[in-house]
Length: 90
Image (tube, rainbow, N blue to C red):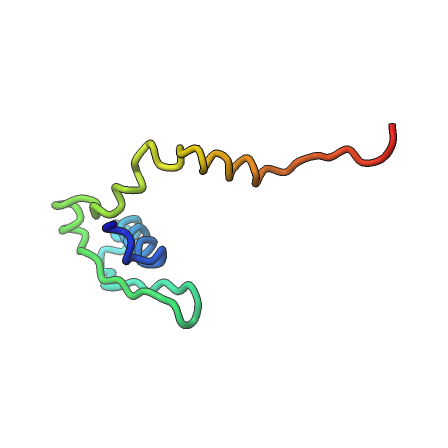
């Protein structure tokens, strides 16, 4: 429910921010585009704030070891696998 209103672009922006802020401590904002009409401008915490409070709690949802283990997810992986088919006579 908490993630329902957020787009993948917004979540990716948070993730990218958290990976870059240590390398670019003066970074003030990040813009990430899906298309020319669909984008996100994110202003994340400073490096100091990140060190004090840690990762954004939203990203915790994606660190759950059970993520992706649902039976339907396994079925989708099976359906996406390339298959070899024998064609022709004996």
